[in-house]
Amino acid sequence: MYKNKAILMGFLGGDAVVRTGKNNKPFTTLSLATKESLKDRETGKYTDFTEWHNLIVSGKLGDFAAKLKKGAHIEIEGKIEHTAYKGTKRDQIRVRSILKLDRAEKAAAPEEEFDEIPDEEVAA
Image 1 (cartoon, rainbow, N blue to C red):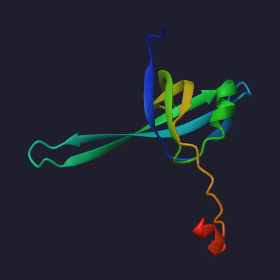
Image 2: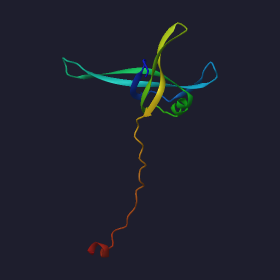
Image 3: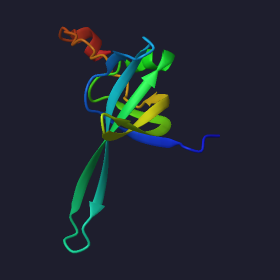
Image 4: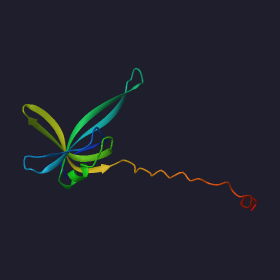
């Protein structure tokens, strides 16, 4: 059981990017958008708030993540990490699992041309 666990569901803001780390091992970075809608008590209207999350995926899961494209609907589970690089603090999620939520695209059936029904078949 993990003590630092984050589960997020959202849409990718861009295609996956594969990079190479200090140890010359590849890793994949993703940008995930999550949206929350809050209702204004006075007006009754909903306002959307979008948050962006930086994801880091390595190993075999990183190979899978490298194939993900902008707009993909995914759910991830991972660990929140706080880093500092050249004086800039960043939060990122070290991903442990990815679930792709997109529906499988259905192949469009080709339109078939039908001749008129012969009179013999209509009478039967």
